[in-house]
Length: 349
Image 1 (cartoon, rainbow, N blue to C red):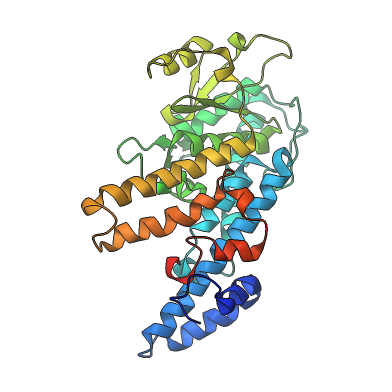
Image 2 (cartoon, rainbow, N blue to C red):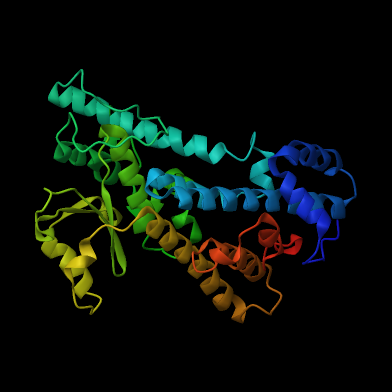
């Protein structure tokens, strides 16, 4: 494999096309030679593993975007997080799908706690409740539990952080390190309980759906993301209630949502509190990540051409990640075009 060849690299294309089928073989080669003085071979194997992870994530991403609303909101966030799987994570895991299992387990555990607390408090023992660990897309328009009671219990994970004598680290907005890219990765946010509004909103809506089957809306206010609770069909948007997951799951009125917009010196329009689609949520998450890496690459040590390794790493992520954006996606219609695209060659992996 010529790792310096960026186009028409047939061996690289073949390895990426084999994908998951050759991961175990590459891992074996890497393990066999990691203790020998063959750093070039080891680095090549690492690049191959990184490349396979990225290509697999991109293929899942394209599939989810074609599914649209049929996919769960967290599925797109998982695909984005998979793009960040590197050889170190792959070597310590069974396959490329550990993020799926971890996210499903964490969201399911939180939903089960909510269900248990509602049963204990409201005495609803035989409620028609969904399986909290199911990855199947199950949505209802009503629940055996009053929705506001579910929202009240969600404060456990965003405000109180205490359950059955067990301390729970509540989710919170990462105001001190807002532009850290880990704030946008669902697996990292589940581990650290810190994130930015959009990732916290995805987690919040996923837990509520798993707990009671109700699909909440994500509202893309200018400069901020909140969760929108459903209101009566035909009712004006001014009757909507929102949840600010970045600020301890605080309940917001329509007027308070307006104030968030006007604080940015933007004239409020009622359509600003209408839901955005799954694809729009995912696109916003990718744009946040591209911005994080681009900003850091441009500001660290004076720019991208100074030989700084951290700067180079940021560009190596930002450039290929841009192809997750819909304005570039139409240019990629085949797997070969993906592997040939800027930033998908061995050197960027």
